[in-house]
Amino acid sequence: MATQFLKSLLLLSTLTLTISAEYTGFVGTLDPKSIGIKHKKTLSHFRFYWHEVFTGENPTAVRIIPSLLKYNTTTFFGTLGVYDNALTVGPEVYSKVVGKAEGLFASTSQTQVDILQIFNFALTQGKYNGSTITFAGRMSQSEKVRELPIVGGSGVFKFATGYMETSSLSFDPQTRDNTFQFDVYIYY
Image (cartoon, rainbow, N blue to C red; front, top):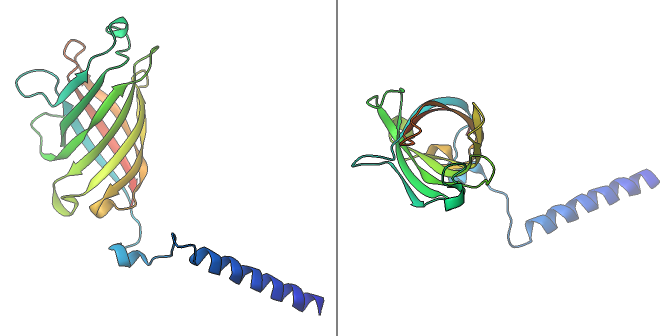
């Protein structure tokens, strides 16, 4: 009798929790297909190269706010900028363009060159055309390989998670022009 009572109490508690969760007015369960997610998740590796140019007639990166004078030649603390860099399939500037890296950067450390990056990879080729992958995080220039988390995406990459690793292939300390390799590991 006591066992039957405990089972009934457990069932009633479970139903009560389920009902109260469903009727809160701000949350509900969805079928993924109802918002266009028709496939099981995929884990993929993409490799891109970006080419960032601060100089010349057509720069792809611009400093909007310069660093504080005190940090002008050390950490560039206080610098804020935006970019619209080409993403290519190879490290050469003239290799095939498959998208753009659009975002902003801020130098956020007074003691070392650390950069807050918030950006999208907006892809333009094949089934990924019109889809974006969004990244946000801290990149310490003292690290040979840097990581940033994927915080979302659009199009094919709805509900994306993962991370990317990046490393510098070339950097001109005078102009700050650079080429980076990005290895993106994305679960979508």
